[in-house]
Length: 190
Image (tube, rainbow, N blue to C red; front, top):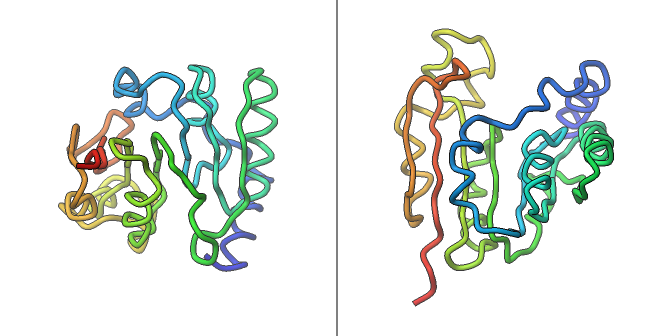
């Protein structure tokens, strides 16, 4: 991302705050598949809605995001919830992905296609990736996110080549977005 993107997100979080404090519905749906006391990286986790929910369930969560304003909201919300959440201010276009091994990576509504090979590299063998991103069909009902930040229909499966798909689907979500949602596992070392 650029300095422009950082400024955009800092302004958005500073003026609007967190749009939601509730975890993503797909994350709640697959929660019973997350091993206890997992070490989790929340990529582009912003104000921490998913990270705090996971921390309340006993996981060690780190949020990596470009927006210091979003991360400050996450730290404040974590303190109010009386849970620990680590934060890293970083630009995924310039900074390396935080070193693992991670038990799980959570990536909701953030897309950098080149990161998928990094995800596989920093997840431990058998580690999980939870990924959710709107597709181009989402524009039929929603004007955001704009086209450059959407998956093509069917693209999600190709991004997860090399992963074992535990749950993978594309369609209209309960949150009224046309999304690709997946829970995938890095194959265990042979």
